[in-house]
Image (cartoon, rainbow, N blue to C red; front, side, top):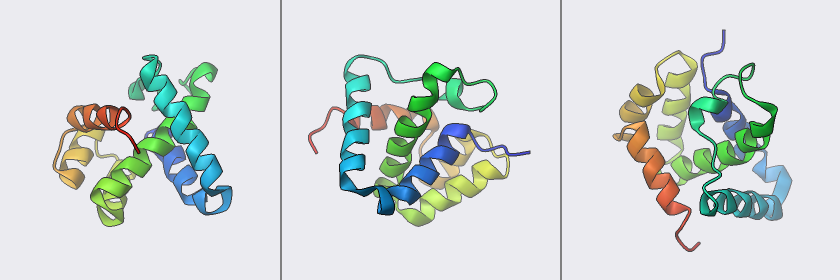
Length: 122
């Protein structure tokens, strides 16, 4: 059974597909996620963790919000740390523990820092 949160799996897939989707798609994704942040409409990560349990209304968030977050950790911590995080999650390590061991920060704090980054100018 796959243990990795669905939003992480799709975020990684979307990040990998950037090469083919182009910069316009990335700009659209970033604009959508920032708009959700400004209107307090970001989805809770735990509501998007399991494919079978995620409401259809959040499927767009899984891909766009997941993509943005995975891109954020990739840029902030580098590919090696991101890949260690994904490996840990895929092997069943809980999200907070995997985040702490890979990035040196707990998930709650990292999520708060990511949310703050959405307010910053690009």
